[in-house]
Length: 260
Image 1: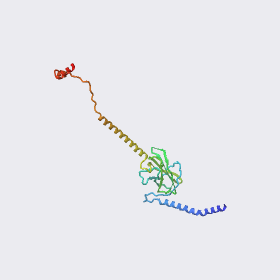
Image 2: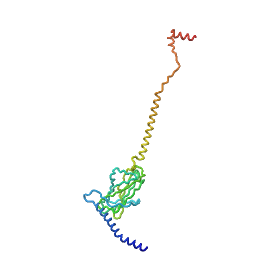
Image 3: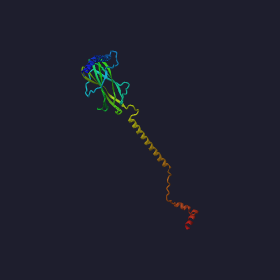
Image 4: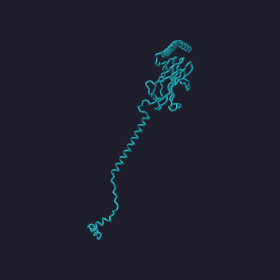
């Protein structure tokens, strides 16, 4: 047992230089990435710095924005801001540092709210953390944020609130880079549930209207086929007509019939 412990400690001692070398290489890569985004007088594009880390839960704590820090948000190849439910979407967060100290970007987080009331939270999206992500003084950088809304979220218009958390001189700050509407659509289907329901309802109304028109046409055709009624009342004899017929064969035949 003791020999096994000695062997294990010796293995750790042999491996420690390799770990230090690997760590120094990663730190050097982070420094090179940070230096690559330092703007020149003619540079206008935003650079990407740092690397992504595992997302962490930063709670509901809010911080104030730092002076001299400006943010911007872009939905690449998605100017309509359409978010498929259950699928990953990407946006880019641009940070411009006009301050005198460098910025250490910690994480980006976002949440989905109802458009008419931001106090009604729909979903907290996954926070995305960064390692060695810094923006030097008078510099700018771009950070990608990949998120996905719940696949059970009903299609419609929602408000997306995105926040970037950073540190300046070990003081935490946060800035809201986006606070606007997005359109959530159902993924994988050409028609949504609401569209199918409306189509079925419209078809049913058209069928009912057609049946009503058909019944009205049948009623009209039956009325036209009916023959008009002829009313037969009691006959009345005109006295002037009897005086004019007196002495004729008609009156004589009537007298004979009466005698018989």
